[in-house]
Image (tube, rainbow, N blue to C red; front, side, top):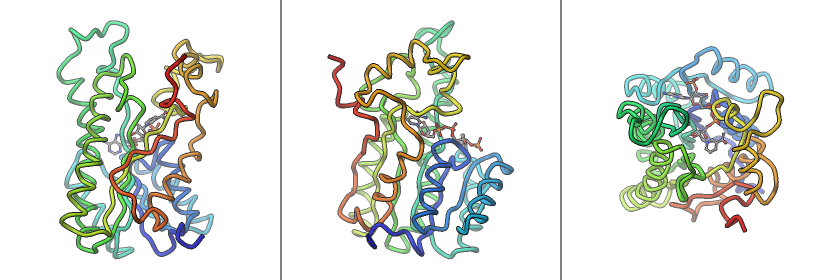
Length: 270
Ligand SMILES: NC(=O)c1ccc[n+]([C@@H]2O[C@H](COP(=O)([O-])OP(=O)(O)OC[C@H]3O[C@@H](n4cnc5c(N)ncnc54)[C@H](OP(=O)(O)O)[C@@H]3O)[C@@H](O)[C@H]2O)c1
């Protein structure tokens, strides 16, 4: 199992302060990586870093905004000062933003340009910038694994989430484009892939998927009805795929998007 080990590797997880990013940070640490937890909420990043350190892992809290170039460069300096290398980047910062969701008073026709641009910026530019800034170190090293976080709505649009879906579709395109670019210009040690999670209860979708009493909302029920495994995912169910994509176990794999979705994307609904 040595090829799955992340021992001596240094990882950064953007959105490591969130539900999925936090689970991924734990998973990478348990596989042996030192982990930089990046988010805007310094206290949350530090609390997770402390938990990892107390559990015997190596971790560093990084306060940065994925849309703020200068804060990302500062985070890169902190990581290089402490660890001297960057081997793995998981771009997990992202999510939907209400104003770009066609729901309630928001129709396709009155959705504002600003709301659309905000959600595209967070999910697309917020993947691009960290990849430029941390990926540059990987290009210098001649090795590194970048893992973007896509969504079910990238390949087959879900209703309502227009801006988010557009942005995640672009993340899939970016994943494939960059896989080719880095391999051709920087060699076979650089790989770029994505994970497309199915439906996991997170901070930002809880109110959409569950009612106040914990039962499924109508949309939550619709999702379960279209998920052959019949349930929402648990955040740590992304970990195995992330370790595989981050490690040498996937050294001939680049430019793919792996669904971890309980069968949602395979099911036609009939
Ligand atoms: N949950 C699901 O079912 C699901 C399904 C498919 C895809 N996804 C994707 O998975 C990723 C993680 O989602 P999640 O459910 O774990 O959501 P979450 O709990 O809300 O975590 C998202 C994290 O992103 C960080 N973030 C947001 N804006 C940022 C910015 N400008 N700069 C830096 N960090 C920022 C937030 O941390 P700070 O507030 O500390 O900055 C937050 O902790 C997202 O890309 C989401 O689109 C989720």
